[in-house]
Image 1 (cartoon, rainbow, N blue to C red):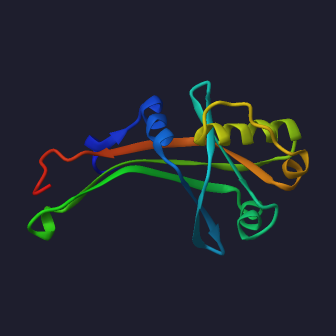
Image 2: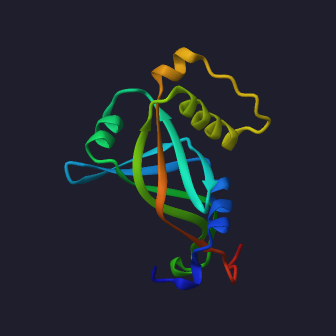
Image 3: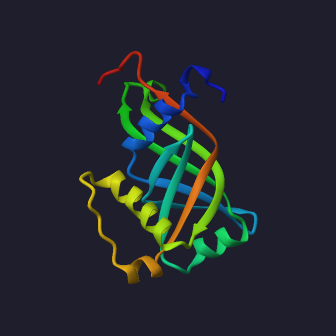
Length: 163
């Protein structure tokens, strides 16, 4: 990372950023070209490793690509704020972001799928007690990505110009 002053390496700080994000952008490859889709997600941190959970329809382009090449890049960003200025060069953006790399693994065991879907729901709604229709669990594709590499970045304005 070029700007080491913005880099975040501490997993707990990166997870705090990810917890504030609503969407994860998943990057895959399609015949050598990038293919990125926004997805809802959940996560768990065990033994200082983050695992991310996703769900989608059981067929389609994303599923086909993940089966051909399960290597993915996950990108999260939040806390955006435009900083304006009189000159174009005075404009900037505050943000927090995280990037992770890993391998997508499909979950087929019904109990593990339900656990993954629970993690996903917990990210968006507290309170627990989530119930899942068995038929929907069977029909839904669920996959996980354990982060092999993960880093974060944060930019906060030091001096605000005309805000």
